[in-house]
Length: 74
Image (tube, rainbow, N blue to C red; front, side):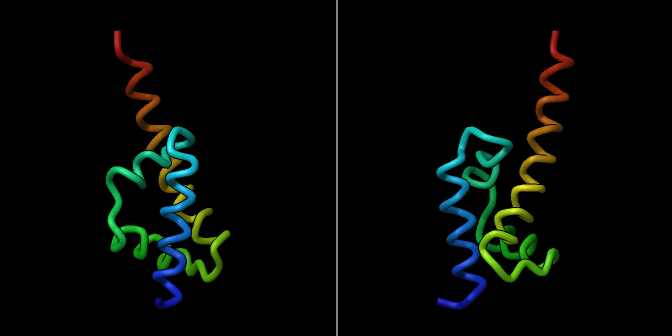
């Protein structure tokens, strides 16, 4: 397993454990390995904690946007 594959697996494992928090459900349901790898590479995340932080930021942004939309429903 390559280093990037290890980071991807760690991110996916974290996402499953935190499925109902801060948009991690997006990662579980919508992100493939390629999308996760792009985020990790864009942020130059070389450790598990940096990879989780990088992907978590993207997921949180999506979750915030979802909550904004839900707040406008009447």
